[in-house]
Amino acid sequence: MPKMKTKSGAKKRFKVTSSGKIKVAQAGKRHGMIKRSKKFIRQARGTTVLCAQDARIVKKFLPYA
Image (cartoon, rainbow, N blue to C red; front, side, top):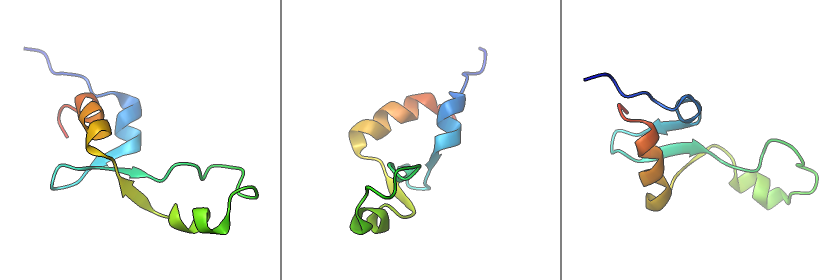
């Protein structure tokens, strides 16, 4: 049986925690910070965990994670 391929875009964007949740960088911080509120920039710092519905989709892209 051949190995399954991992989606290369997914392996660059997502990490799987030890409990099996999907960790991802906060969205909306690449450019246009002037129009964003200070509260938004502060709260979008670091990483977040995907919701269960999105995590189910991403786990299909990462078969060995």
